Image 1 (spheres, rainbow, N blue to C red):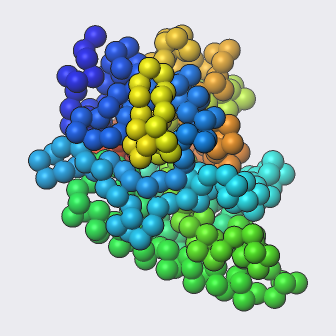
Image 2 (cartoon, rainbow, N blue to C red):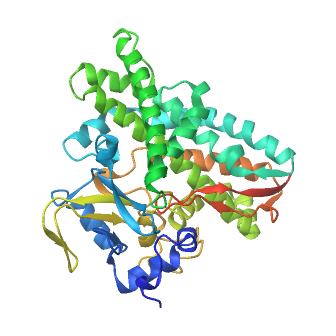
Image 3 (cartoon, one colour):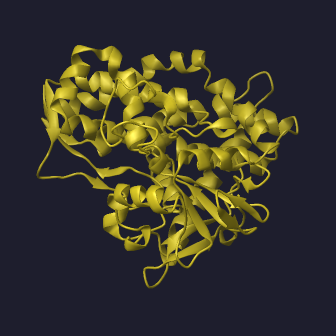
Amino acid sequence: MRSPDAFNFLDPETVDDPYPFYAALREHAPIYQVPGTDVYLVSKGPLIEEALYRQDDFSANLTGVLMTGPEGEPQVFDLLNFGSAVDAIANADEPSHSVHRKLLLPHVTPKVVASLEKTVREWAIELIDPLVHAGGGDWVNCVANPLPTRAMALVAGLPLEDVDRLLEWAMSGTEILAGTTTAERMSLVGAKTAEMAAYLKEHLQSALAAPDDQPAPGVIGALARGVKEGLISQSDGVSILVVLAGAGGESTSSLTGSAVRILAEQPALQSELRASPLLIPAFVEEAVRLESSFRGHYRVVRRDTKLGDVELRRGSRIMLLWAAANRDPEIFDNPDSVDIHRSNLSEHLSFGRGVHFCAGVRLARLEARVILEELLARTRSFSLDPQHPPRYVSSIFVRRHAELGLIAEA
């Protein structure tokens, strides 16, 4: 097996298909220093879980990210260039993290999420039917992007008529973490994120102005209450909404795109799921294991310490590669293949672990299940369009299709 040093971390070929690189990391350097930087890639599940539980040593605050330098080399971009670090929800440490999560969780309980199924299904039918009737189309543009953004807006309490703007802003926001982004491009996407923050601040202020006996709906209403009660600041509320707007749509867009691409490549699996729709939730778990929506998340080293056998200096960063750990043959048999009958289906790390386990996981699973149910029910078969082969967004952070051309037979 090749050494990790044999790969160009930011080369388009490695970015598009990172799995040989991840295998080399697991085999030769489970904690690997990105050349020329103080960023370390962590690729083995036990090491990732250890870092997650050592919160005194590793902060979730997002203070800097990898980007591409003028010669194509990896560099670290300091997020203080945008005014501050990101320290909301998934990027918050205790005790702030628990406060943020407590405000959000009532809006994603099993009961609340179940109540959204009818609406999500109606949206899925509305978006899938035209694609099927046309004999195919770009799944990403037709379904995978718009539906999750609608669902995020509904839960957040934001106007559904603003979904197109929210989608553009969300995708720009995650581009900050792409690693392939240049300094010049960082300025542009930073400006887009500032636009989104200003929009969300305006809506939070409207929620704050609502009378107590008629609170604003959704998460934004809960955040307004949190501000009024002194639990969070107004800037905290905006930051939480920025993270929610980005992660809420991006993650499920990525998941549903990957799931449909896998099925388009495996007609026998399509047939099995059509015959036994109750297996769809198991397939969703395999799809998110194989193609983790977010390939990894950063942690900042709070003090000189050690992880595994590697010394880490205060201020350096680690990137916890869920996507690498999810294909570890020591954890999963035949890790590069779909097996919806695995005994350890839920042991993947795609939704995080511990206190930072994804708060929106129930909604993501619901959306993916309903979308797949409706697509399978409305087609006899679907396959990849050879005239429009799948393209991925160029990112070391997200695993999302930029285009997924399908041929569909009703």
